[in-house]
Image (cartoon, rainbow, N blue to C red):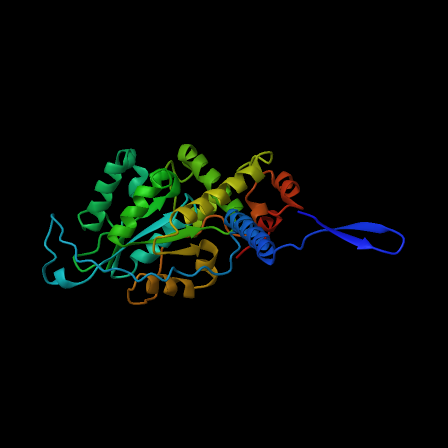
Length: 329
């Protein structure tokens, strides 16, 4: 409310209207509310701007849990007192997860059991997912990767589009309850992944290697034969497709933020061999030299592997995705 002040002079009187002083507490409240709104906005933007170019993502500082499984199908004998760690490789198709898994399986103490949820019945609902997970982590799941009763780390690889995102709440609860460590494996350059996806899809029907489809090869000759096919990438939807890939990865990281996890990039595994040591340390297993017989199929510049390279180059030049056109390892 305004204050009225009367001033009297010799000849006349005048009225001056004086505005009241603002309360310091009121001003402080305004500043506080403004700061909170800005903070929430900035946080929301940062969550959306997940970047595949992060130089280093470190594991969450949650202590790993150890287990002493008692399988129903065999007896662990003297290894019954040996602790076991549970893990899962969370990735996307054609992101190097097959190669990464062979590296882990070259370790004497690791058994990673492949892409077990590629079978629809195993992920038809939450109950079937939990039943499958229990079999794996109880050591009752047998594959060619299964080691022996003395394995120190047991896991598998799981693609994001195989029920993982759709049932993320129940799976996160399971991971936290059972102490499952998650290893996210992504590509920094999703354009290279796109080439691999299209080429692999083509070979499912073309069967370029003597009438046989192979997703992974073990010789330079086989790699060269498969790399001769150059896919055509849809340039009109390319930017949207790249955005969708990044969005899916960001969503997975957000959903599984409360689990014990680490993020690994395919390109870093190639250029920084110490990254493999960090993975082994994350799993709390003895650090060893890991190896794989797999041979990379699409090597060299991307321009050698995309049929409509000029269209792709024109589409991405001048955008935030221009960096994907160059060599990245």
